[in-house]
Image (tube, rainbow, N blue to C red; front, side, top):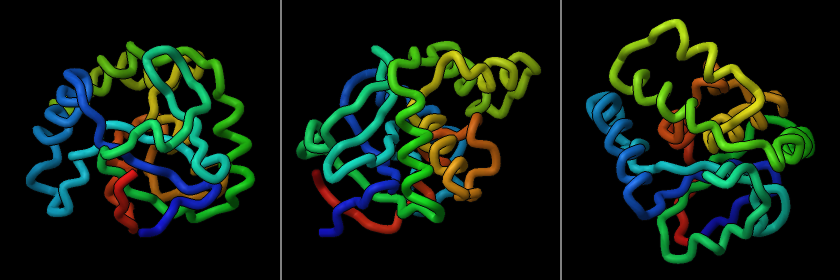
Length: 167
């Protein structure tokens, strides 16, 4: 079992209704394109210390322990960049409110729709969702795998997962 290192991203399959809605939306759009089933993941975070992550939750961006997701499937996405810059960027987002409007905007994106207001909402840095937090932190570290970190979904990050583990 490979443990995530500082600066790595993790994608997680969580339980609950909201998680199932996110996975269903991703499945609608990416099921035929993604043989690796990256759409199974509905949450993303940045590892800032051994076993410690920064994540965006409905209560806002916070520091948590990765083992809070015990017995739920998780994959590690190895950072292609400077881990210190990734951690520094992730920490800047702590206490930022959750992007509920971003979730609505992402719903339109998963349906293949792209109204002009979607881009404006997703680029509003006053709020953030988990996948934006992870992709923006990686981007700040020099990892440019995500075409547009503001429009990153968990599936966008999970497609680069290299290591599998259960937490």
